[in-house]
Image 1 (cartoon, rainbow, N blue to C red):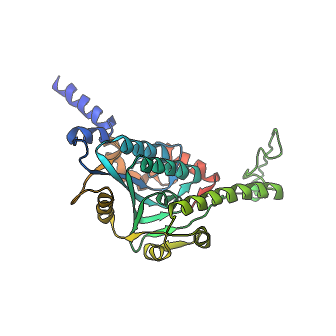
Image 2: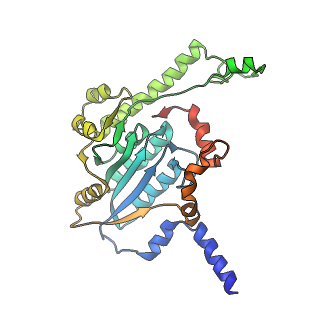
Image 3: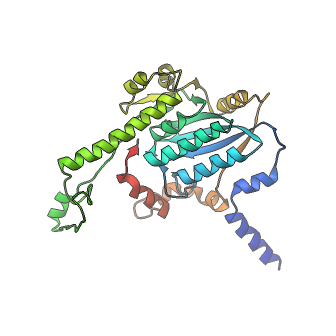
Length: 304
């Protein structure tokens, strides 16, 4: 009987999200002035659940956390801790939409940049009230890229042929088994240009009063900047670390003194136990399903 109860407790610990357990440990009263913390770690992808175990930042998971912070009556401000080189354009975009909704709900948003907060990471950061970066943070990389592979030559050497039965001339556009046509190149370039314009729009709106659209465009050629350079150029508001960002968020929200924090996470004990395996599962042939799905998305337009 005792053994059965212990096993049940372990199973529940493995599958109950830690955010729920934290709420039970310390529910604060209304208007207590808490700063929520949401981590965006790793390449940004759209269709995986994402966790420490996966090594990717899932837009679905992050959007859920942003909505939780928005509905949490204790939380008056949120720090987004970004350590990401970018990723899926659409995934970055939908996270950015939820950041805007968080601000519309009257909650202050401060971004704390870690080692890198570039491209899609900067897309998300641009929507915050304030951006704090370390002097050595790598940021910027405002631009869009779509990479296509062509294995036609290799397939020919191996004696492999591919034939496509398609409903229209562009249905296999971007196939790795053939060259793209000039017409297809124009189509794809048009897509990249359109997403690039959307990126410029997001940064221009987010940095309103700090940078003009022309200034944004001058920097939006894909180059990266250190945090200190970004501060001088207007892409970043302040230099500092995570704790500086938390204090700033508290100040913007009118919290006196050192604010309490509430970290949002959907990870469970199983994720924590296996988090050290991240580098191991990255070896060829040992990719997890979440990672395989992320690699599948590489043909989509990316912000990196």
